[in-house]
Image 1 (cartoon, rainbow, N blue to C red):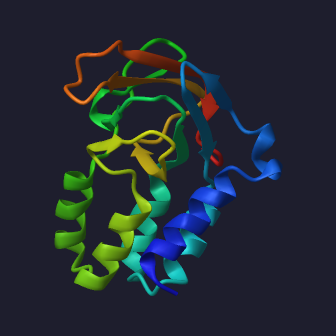
Image 2 (cartoon, rainbow, N blue to C red):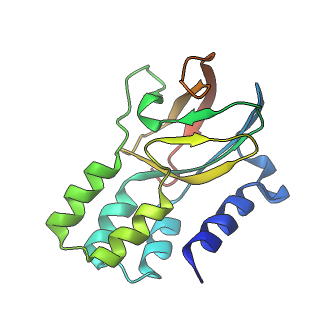
Length: 178
């Protein structure tokens, strides 16, 4: 199966009716769903793709949040997870683990380039301009959180990023199995 088809199927699965129970938002021209993954789901996914055992163990210790976003606006919405904030129930920041973190970790673990590429297409892009009607989906990884946490996702708008900023808040999220 080719990569674009896999990504399309993943995004489509996020919008399936069965996902309706997951935290979701629809308004301001954006639809967004957030679904925390269990360590078992992460292990099974990456084991099935031939990742080395040490890499699977490292990945399953992180908190994976699968996100699906659809731009319903008539202008561009900017996806930039570095602008998102995560904080625990006490208001303390929760660290997001960006691609650069995983690249360094995979280098130390000797993860082959093909596995790194596979991991890359499962993550949300670090920067992406979502055109009208365009969807995107992928994972965000965090340092594991015990208890609940909040995500505040901020999106710049307009081709020059000077349009109104959209801020979406998802409360009482969890890292399953923690």
